[in-house]
Length: 91
Image 1: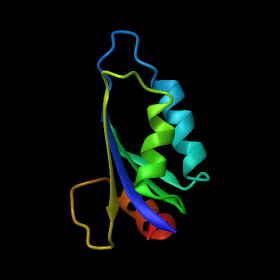
Image 2 (image 1 turned 45 degrees about the horizontal axis):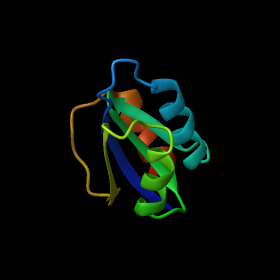
Image 3 (image 1 turned 60 degrees about the horizontal axis):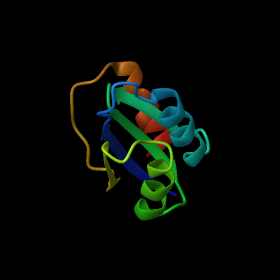
């Protein structure tokens, strides 16, 4: 399984955050975390293209989406609880 970073900008006034969240959880087989407001980290056996195509079905055509494969070379400023989850369940 591969770890991906998913980030997005939803631009429509009536944003579909719930639909987006549900799709990401489904694509991750429940291996996900949301360390920042518009960022998810997920584990999936799908390709970045396949993940993007599935998410594009639930967001608007004027929204933006970026899906990037992540390697286990990470550093940042998050809560200890978030780092523990990332290290235990994603890497």
